[in-house]
Image (cartoon, rainbow, N blue to C red; front, side, top):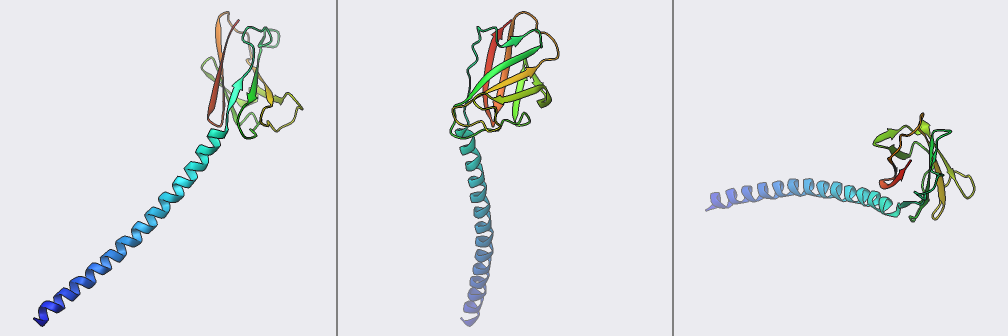
Amino acid sequence: MASLSASSLILFIAAIGIAAGVSGVMVDSVGGISESITTHGDSVEEQLDTDITIISDTGSDAIYDDTDGTVTVLVKNTGDRSLPTDPDLVDVVFDGEYVVPSSTAITVVSDGGKTWKEGEVIELVIDLDGSLYAGEHRATVIVDGDEEVLRFYV
């Protein structure tokens, strides 16, 4: 009878040790998952607060300047936070080709400053290094994951 109690006690102690080890691993894993969810949530919140709208008139002759070989796009910050005006942080795709940041210039229309606040408009000038063919063209502007497309004809 005593040997039965001793073996049961040894198995019980082993089970408690294994349970403690497993719970330690679980607490660490849950902490990592919680931190990941918080980080992802902050990123999603930032993307939700970002909203832009292209307000250029597609029927206007002011979009394409055939003398300079530039396209000018007016973009309004309709989101809930200030956005960057650094050309390295604003992606532009023109007719399916990525436009390098050195070929773009960004100016805040209201004050010419560097902060693109809520409700303000920027003038985005794209230097094409050449002229456009007659027909439809597309300029896509991407800021912090929000994407807007301007279709116009030459």
